[in-house]
Structure formats: C-alpha cells, structure tokens
Image (tube, rainbow, N blue to C red; front, side, top):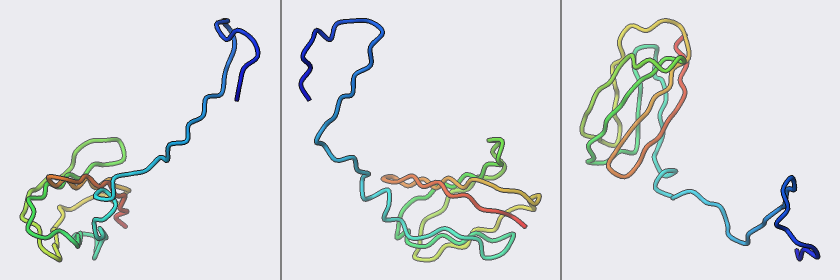
Length: 105
C-alpha cells in the first residue's frame, strides 16, 4: 500500500500490514491434557520428571487451592471440597504455563 499524500495528519487512521506470521511457541501447546476424573480429582498427563506448580482459582480470581509436585506421565491431584462452579486451573513448569477451565458439578 502506498499513500499518495502526507500521513502526518491528526484524526486519521491508517492500516499497517506485515508479512510476518503470528505463532505461539510449540512448548506451550505440547502439554498433554488436563481433565477432571471426578469432582475431587484432577488428572494431568504428559509431565515427565518436571517440577510442577498448580493453582486453582474461582471464577472471580480468588485462589482456592495450590500445590507443587514432581510430574509423571499421569498425575492425579486430589482437590479440596469445592462448591459447584467453574474454576481456572493454572499449571506452571519451568518452560510452560497452561490455563484450563474446569467445572465442578
């Protein structure tokens, strides 16, 4: 796109494009899975020999649970008694951070 007039005016909007591709680091996507086995057990797979930190937040952002553990292929985390609601699970390792939503029914 080539502009034919002076672009140093106020009150104007200009579209600027780039040929770069937007992407996400593959390490953030290659995680395994996080899912609820029952209302008191959370299963996390695909964490091999890593120090893992897990935090659980309610939908308002209040931290309701946190733990740390050494990851294995399959990790079952016992959750406290929680109200029926949606929660956000943040899982941190040295190289990754993953957030997932779970619903306790």
